[in-house]
Image (cartoon, rainbow, N blue to C red; front, top):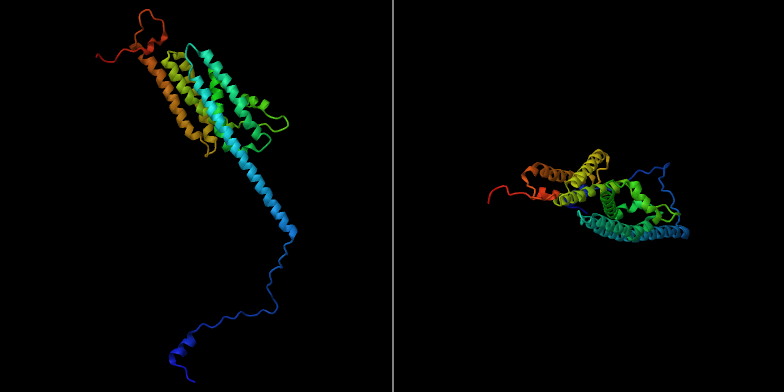
Length: 282
């Protein structure tokens, strides 16, 4: 039987099967698989069940911590608003009310956060409670400055948290980073307070605030370059500088333009500096 020329060429061009040489002495064998026993399967299931329980409990704790942090933030802001109601005539009354409100925030809301985090690795949930702690630091330091004229340090704040903790557990302590971030926010509230005091004629008090804010900014300027790049401090440093400049410009304007203001006849009120005459004739 004769094949056609086309079929013969196709047969010659077809790939030939590749044959591997057999090695007589060396035989590659995979290690025998270990049979999976019921005990092994049970231990794996138990391990993953424990992981599941741990993650579920951690997520539930995180939700409670976020809720407590939110309540601390809201009520700390109320304390700050109370401080801003201060005036020449009601200073002691307003500050006493603010201090009492701050104590209520500590007893009712901060205590919840302490009970959730005491005795645990609370640094794992720092992002969940950090905003509330920063706002609490801001309110506490603002009240202390207006009341005593000094800075409330971190050790003093943490000392107020110790009675809220169970002595048998590791107490929750505010870390230095949250304290510094709250202190940076404090300068913005002091700027608003200083502008209000200037409008009320308390220039000396505003100058005291200006010096205090300037000192905080100078000290934080030395610390910020050594802090982690992922912190919010570098952003807040720009805001702090703006606050310092606003207070300085306000105090400077009153001093420079003081000669252009006329004291009302028979008036000894220092607020006359703010009762200016128009710059041009109408």
